[in-house]
Length: 115
Length: 112
Image (spheres, rainbow over the protein chains, first blue to last red):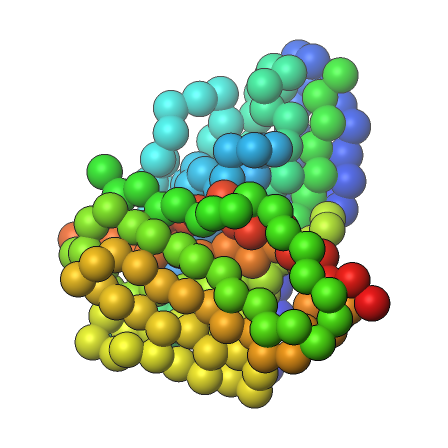
């Protein structure tokens, strides 16, 4: 069966520090991968999505970036965190080739607090 | 731009009552509508997916309906239990750009 792992679960970082969040999917090949951010009262915001290794699409211009160095690995990064980067970051995946018949599957998220 | 609205933001019901959660969306050009459950501090768990050509989907005590022409979906949870306490989010897969547009969710508390 397919599983998705996200780490760390919680993170407290000072303003201006770098960030690296990692997500891996097991039990599937060539999934579509997504990074979302959930801020209090604002709902889920799509940040990045990827349909393959090295293929990243950015939805919102900001100081975050994403990379996909391996088929089932998705990394969210920042060189210098801002206070406004605080939030709950969720990785998700969708099986390729299933059209619109499969739901999105989410990891357990990373709670990031920038101080 | 697709807008998804869920009202009310929060509600409480006594155990045993049926739960009715509403979701509305502004553009009927969608591939599907998905309902998710989110427990505090956790990710989202998929509950039901309704294709745009379907009218409803059922899973156990859960039933979701879709009226695409009017831009509405309803999630019914029969005989609610305290374990149903969570936030329920609906999302529509937008035609043409393959992006899920989410509502902000209904926070549900089932009182024992």
